[in-house]
Every structure is written in structure tokens, then in C-alpha cells.
Length: 265
Image 1 (spheres, one colour):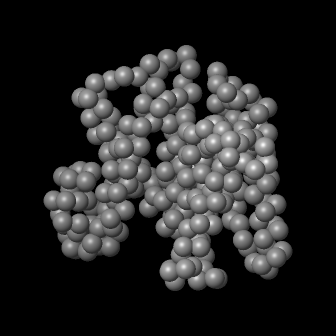
Image 2 (cartoon, rainbow, N blue to C red; image 1 turned 30 degrees about the vertical axis):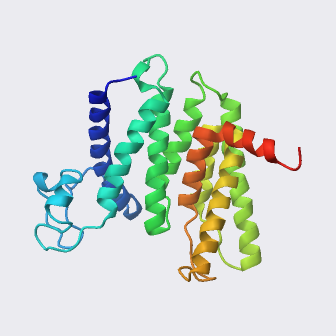
Image 3 (cartoon, rainbow, N blue to C red; image 1 turned 90 degrees about the vertical axis):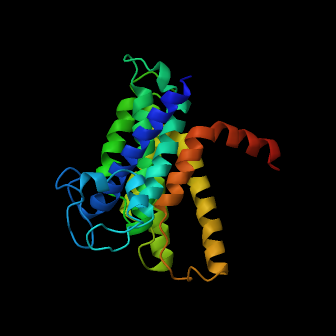
């Protein structure tokens, strides 16, 4: 385990990553480059000065407004930065990056995978889209990671990917047949295929179960308080991302608890 100072450094790095993630969240669904041009205000398009782009601090200093046009800066920006810092510290500890070996870069790949989950959560929440620029490289990365020492074999990774994508595709077809309209986006299908490549068959099934459970509960609450209409559109990606995270980190424990209290065992 590292020292408190090291955790602080990791947290600061996480804040910087969060600033970059905000760029990705805005630009990826709009098919814009995440490298050029430099960050600018989405309202007045003025280039953001480096000292106005310090994670969290600049938001507080500018009182949540653009320095040029004074239009409000969304709370999503500091929230993603703070969440990324906490998330990165957690991932560093969980995957034990303190003892990382160059012979097995799998922990680094898993950290990148979890960053994909974070991006998916916020992009789909805002735009109802899951960009191919996340899912397609994720599928390739997941399949490639199975050739490294780990829990999955390449065949298990491929099987998980086919099951994840195929299962959600069939659910989408069934929903379209019943509702007479598109009920499942292609981005969700490719996202679950990516998840299957990383977590295998057991992980992808648990992800779908948890994501559907959380999505159903949130939808019921939204309907009961009038925030969601019966015909309202709901992003499934954020729930799948949450389900993936819990399945990846605590999947075995969740299954153990379920089997312990299940009426069918």
C-alpha cells in the first residue's frame, strides 16, 4: 500500500483525467476530435485559458460561470472531475497498481475498461448515445486481454462477447415487435458485447440482471413522482455501466448472497 502523499498524487491525477473525460463526454457523441482544438466555452466558443481550466478550482474561482460570456458552467464538469479522482484512487487500490509488473499489463487494461464505463454512463445519460469509439476499441481490448494471465480464456471472452451482444440484440428485436418501435439501440448491444469480452458469460448475465433491476427501480420511482412519463425515453447505458461495475468488483459476493437467500436452492 502507498502512503497518504501517494494517494493524494493519484487523486490529483484523477482530477486531471476527469477534466479530460469531460472533453470526451462532450465531443465523442458529436464526432469531434478529443485532441484539437483546445477546450472552449460551449456557449460563446471562446478558448478557455489554462488558468481557467484547473479541475474544480477554476469552477469555484469563476463561481460556476464562463470567464468571458458569464453563462453558467454545468455542474457535471466538477462532479465528473471529483468522481474521477475518487474512482481512480479506488481502482489503483483494487487492482493493486502499486505492485504492477510490466510482464502483465492486465490491471492497466482493466482500469481503462472502467474508464470506458464512466464515459458511457455520462455520455448516454446526456445524449442517449453510446459511441462506437468506446465500444469497438473496448471489444478488441477485451478480447486481447484474455490472452494475458487472468480469469478468462480467449474462448470464454469470445463467448461472453457473443452472448452479451446477441442477447441484447434479441431483446431489442422482441421489444421492437411488441412496442412497434425501436426499443434497444445498437450502442447498448455493442456495449454489452464489450462487457462480455471482459467479464465472460457469468459476468455479462449478472450485469444484465443488475442493470435491468436498477433501471426498473429508477423508472418506477420516476413514474411515481411524475419525472418520467409512460412513453418517456430512458437511457439504458448508465444502468448497464453500473451493473457492469458491481458485477466486475463484487460479482462473486453478489451471487453468493443471492444463492444463500434464494428460495430455489
